[in-house]
Image 1: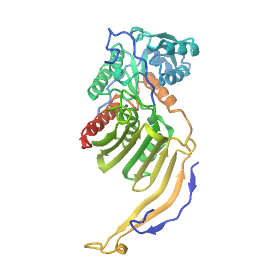
Image 2 (image 1 turned 45 degrees about the vertical axis):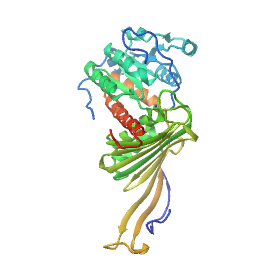
Image 3 (image 1 turned 180 degrees about the horizontal axis):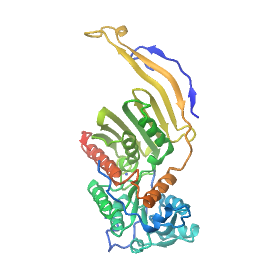
Image 4 (image 1 turned 135 degrees about the vertical axis):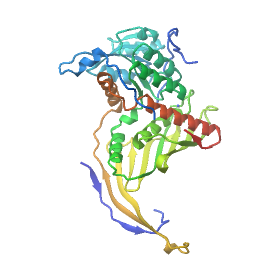
Length: 402
């Protein structure tokens, strides 16, 4: 049940303060060790459902979806754990170039086979799906190879660092009739999903703008800047909430730790219907922040991912009337805004691990031939936005088309 904090309506005068790859195809050898992870194209007409996976639909289904995880760095073990713990999946292989990481996998999961060569799992006809948690620069080659040998693919965000490569993967998945899903894990966050429901129901009215802050002290990357590493989360959330992709992007950034790699980025995305989305992204900040403010013409809300018990607050606040005196305003008294100061609602949101929901969704899509919530085309729109942000940074903040 939602909790309400009461407030009263008062008229107020206007102005009152109140982030060369390895794995290039059949001939590649090995796989790069995974680095730490921090944190409107059409769907394919058909999806091929694997016979073994299709048997999962029955009430007494025992068939397993056999999975290979490529990349056992900081994020890979979380994927291994989730798929290993599912009743409908089996982690058959884990691949990484780092023998030490593979030893840790074997120690914790003795039943999982390990290898340093990704081609081993590509050649294994018993593998239904490949999960890729490697550096972004390797995503395209590995996903392309997996799709080419008939595997379903879940690849970590961003799908690639190049929109042309992302487009190719989307086309290959459609041609092969295979699932291509991208790990935009925040879309599966219960709080993010609750806000999506409020927007779909019209509870917030017309959206004016969204302000998103994602900061922390580290982890500092040397392969991509803060926007590519962190802003992919926020762009995917904004696209999901607004149901569309941005039209333009403008951004500035600063590089202090490593030359040419921005540690902090400030970006503005323009969406259809005059919606603005502002991003403050940094891995050089004293405090870990995951906050979003969304302002609509009926209500406003905040989403704080660091607040596990009360992540969403809905404010019944809005401007109800603006009065001016024609033909010009000659005094403070002639310009007044009537503001509604209503209740603050704190909805009850069930706790749940977003990554578990993401992994479950991937398995459901394979078993039932469903289109993923974060399919290749959705991930492609995120890459296009990040490319526009990058061009704008290099162009001294010039507004760039997405």
